[in-house]
Image (tube, rainbow, N blue to C red; front, side):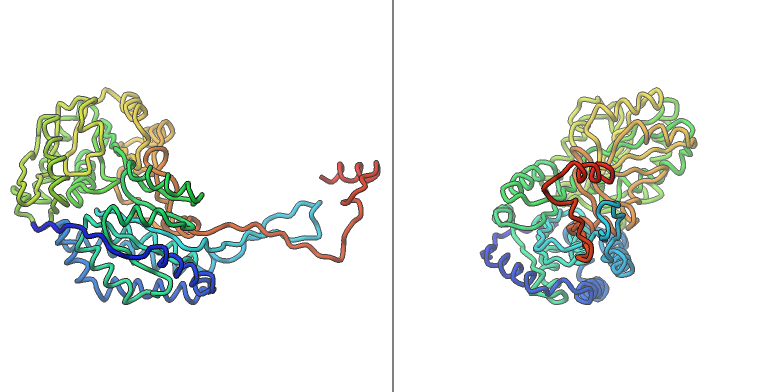
Length: 465
């Protein structure tokens, strides 16, 4: 597979941001008509240029066309349609209760755009994770600088070509390039920064934002556990865990990172996984048109090294030339091994036996709070117990990954897995300022509200405040 080398651009980022800030100051992005038009044009781009985008995703990640369409295109179209449907209600001023002491008067909350937002996207879902935050930013009435990942070079180039064709060039800009360009962008003053990626870079983004007191959303990752209890439907659990894990060859921030399985059913669960993997990808997943590849050589080498941290019960085969790593299930994994210390972000699933739910919960709570947590059990009491005693950005009960596709569910991390959330109204709110407004009449202006504060005024104020 061909690997491209990211190039550094020569863009004057200061001038670029100033241009967008001038467009925002002109009021160009505030009308709902402009916001709707931009969202409709983004949707049009996704539909008309679907083949271009699918081809780029295939070149970067070996994504199967249907998988790429579902996870990178259809999900964004759904976000756009949801925003278009609800934009009027989202932007409508919210009336709030006015205390007696403030009457006559009316209080309301008005959503206002922040200004110029920077969206920095990762390489694993390079269309979805650039455009989905942009849906929220545009719906809220902001200008946007979009920075696609240089790692997914074909997709970056395609988006950089298509976005200016469809969206307002005065208000939306795309910046390509490598690390130096991202660093140069972060030196500029934005009104909001939205970053998706790993925690190490997330800290750099937050540090840069702090210099300008710029608010941020950090969509990070972590080791998202899946707990499988003895009373779970093993056929369904194995199918849904395998699908969530091996989608995009495991390069998904909310993929099940490892499985904590009741000791009595560990063998049976692994057997079910073997059957499911064969059902999904055939006896040779390398030959399957439905199985993706690792994004680059560096990540391939990292994942290849992790295979030594356990015994492959399934898979374990690799091909460096194709950047192929088979769907792999590891057993006999030490909790303190490298594969259990870092987010795997690849098609390697450690399976660790636990005695009961209490042990599984304790194991999860000894680690950073994950971006997602999944529990497979036939008991609603167990579902409630796991959710009550753990913390994660999102969660799935007898499901993996799919919560990301529900627009009305805020998507985001907690603790080391991130801060802030988006999708649907949460995305609109993220890129909006909730401005509190009090409007009072001038017809009534009681003197007891002003100095000098006599004893009579004090009695009145103490009674009503």
